[in-house]
Length: 88
Image 1 (cartoon, rainbow, N blue to C red):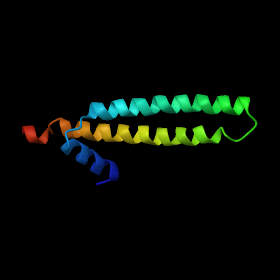
Image 2 (image 1 turned 135 degrees about the horizontal axis):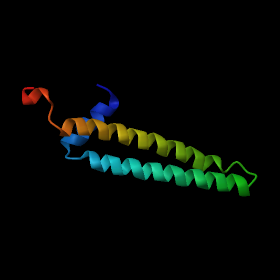
Image 3 (image 1 turned 45 degrees about the horizontal axis):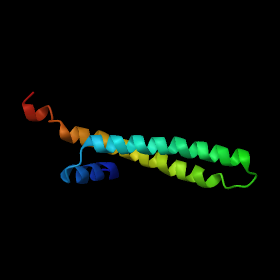
C-alpha cells in the first residue's frame, strides 16, 4: 500500500469525496500556470534571479496537483462498489 493509497483511505474514512480532490487539483494546476506567468514576467523585466522563486513554487504546485489527482482516483475506486461484491 503506497503513500497515496494511505492518504486516500484516510480521506475516505473522514468523509472526503473525490470531487474535493479534483477541485483541489484544478486549483493547484491553475496556480502553477499563474506562477509560470509571474516567473516569465520577472525574468523578462529583471536581470536578477528572482524568477526562480515563483518557478520553485510552480514546481511545488504541480507536485501537489498530481498528488491530489492520484488521491482522487483512489477515492473513486473506494466510492464505487467492487464488481466482486456484487457477485459477478
